[in-house]
Image 1 (cartoon, one colour):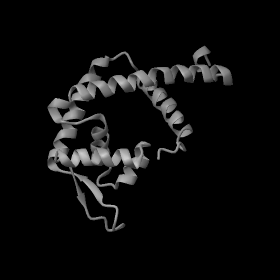
Image 2 (spheres, helix red, strand yellow; image 1 turned 90 degrees about the vertical axis):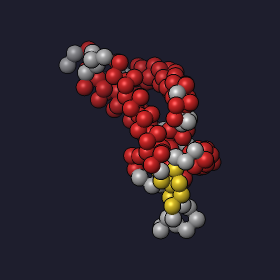
Image 3 (cartoon, helix red, strand yellow; image 1 turned 180 degrees about the vertical axis):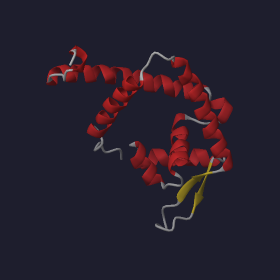
Image 4 (cartoon, helix red, strand yellow; image 1 turned 30 degrees about the horizontal axis):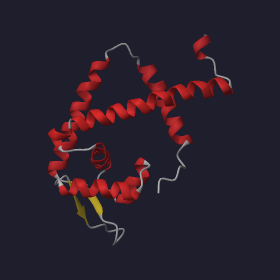
Length: 157
């Protein structure tokens, strides 16, 4: 085992994870600004993008389900759904499991919009270059997943 493979002591680990948080915040905000700079092309804000992507990945969902999945308040998700509906990107459908909570689903225009946004994001991500290894990306995903688990019980409403 080399120096980089050893486990970290509690305080050391805390310091290193603080470095991760210090990078994730600016990364998120810059990503948000980049998406919003392109808003004129698709009419998709960061919040609407999150809704469209959830529906793309999971199919029709209720507003509360989307809120729980993204750790966002139901009120915020509802505003994003209302915005997406106004732009013709999503529509409501009857929910056989619940009379009052409709399912929200992508329209054809919404499917096109989220595909366009994701294609553009992937084009930007391709610019990272080839010096990152699969193991490094796996480690990054593992760390971020653990931090997300740790904060999984944070109330968003």
